[in-house]
Length: 254
Image 1 (spheres, rainbow, N blue to C red):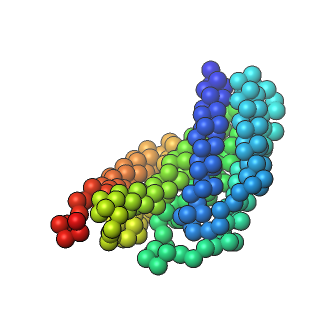
Image 2 (image 1 turned 135 degrees about the vertical axis):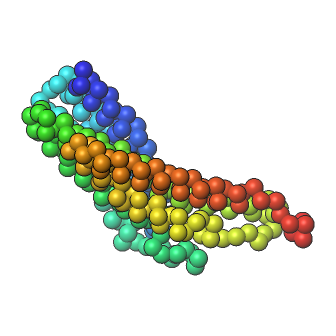
Image 3 (image 1 turned 30 degrees about the vertical axis):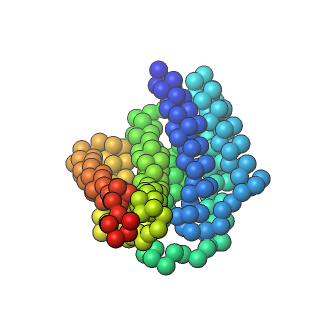
């Protein structure tokens, strides 16, 4: 039964969620950094390797075959191809908007999520090679946290920090009859709140992974509170940003 659960979990986490994140990242990361946007044939290796790897991993886990590690390495190869494109972007920066402050929390979240992706990849490959035991079950807990919370969830938080201000700015500009002026999208977020959210995530992810792996209940509790507070602060920031989208223009602008 556990083999079936693991197979379906990887099909969802890698075949759907990770593929979606990687695909969106190819378009959103250049905007967040900012940097040149990759395209053409250089994007195919990551897609082909990820799809091949997750299909093979699903089948081998479902049938408990001995070749799961081969497909795990194939998935890692696909993720490495994606990371190579991130490096390609970093080497081709574009001019930053004048009001974009540094360090940018969206970039920090994206960078941290890629670090946790690398950690999850290493643990995942090791799990396909190691014999099942109480140790592998503990490592599997940390592997799940780094992959689902550290990579997938934190990447979403990072992209949200840049996409929501753009959404609010467009609506605020439309509300003025496309005449303006409207506040800059880079001035809409709550800067201190964003920084606090990043710090809480920076502690919460490894603390949750370690706490679950070693049955350290106080560490799990501390990590859960950190991520809960981060979610609350982020919600306040989201409300602060979105209110710009619904502000009515003053009569002098009509």
